[in-house]
Image (cartoon, rainbow, N blue to C red; front, side, top):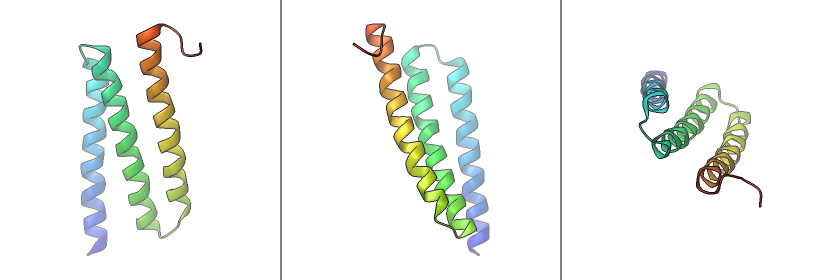
Amino acid sequence: MIEIAIMFTAGCYSIAMLLDLWRIAKGPHSADRILALDTMVINMIAFLVLYGVWRGTAIYFEAAMLVAMVGFVSTVAYCRFLLRGDIIE
């Protein structure tokens, strides 16, 4: 039963990531692209946690933590670049 729930959830996350890719490609403004990229990072974190549950190993939870940290820093850096023109002051 858990395998069916995991496969259904993985399908939903895959569809969400495809919609995020569409928003990144067709976003009318840079803010839309930033939000879509941040949402894609969140979906990837959830997908890694789901895969870790399915495989029964904890290494994917650590990978999800790394993706979360890198995703946060990249979102902040991209926003600062758009607002100020440079990342490092």
